[in-house]
Length: 193
Image (tube, rainbow, N blue to C red; front, side, top):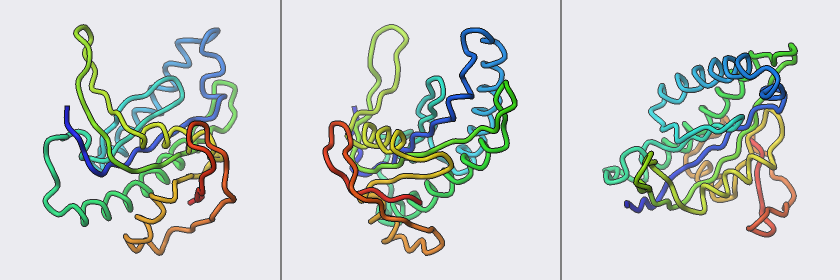
């Protein structure tokens, strides 16, 4: 196992209509999701980020450090600033990509994104079908941000917002939301990007 002092996690959720016919039109649904996630993979790879996994209509991305847990970035502050800016660019690109797609019924699709940052640990677990797992509050918090986000929007924690401010990303429109109750976290201040 490796402990990483700073990581960024993005949860991306597609509109429910993307998988609405998973049981009755399974092969067509798989083809649609494969097309969308293949496009997402290209975007994520282009930025050098790490696709952690996807389950149904949820796609999870992490900063490059998570794919190299034993390699500490040489210039950690510069790494943080770069990754914060790029996380926003990736989120915007994935939202734009999803909006180009249509559900099996022809309905325009959308995506929403939740972003959190913080320390994580990474380890390969299990004996059979071993899997690289990430553990840490940022994983759960990112998922919660995604569930509270809005279609076509990015919702982030105050910690991520602070990092965004430090990175001097003045081209990002930020809207502070009223505090919301987040399961397992209590009241949290969040920001829409």
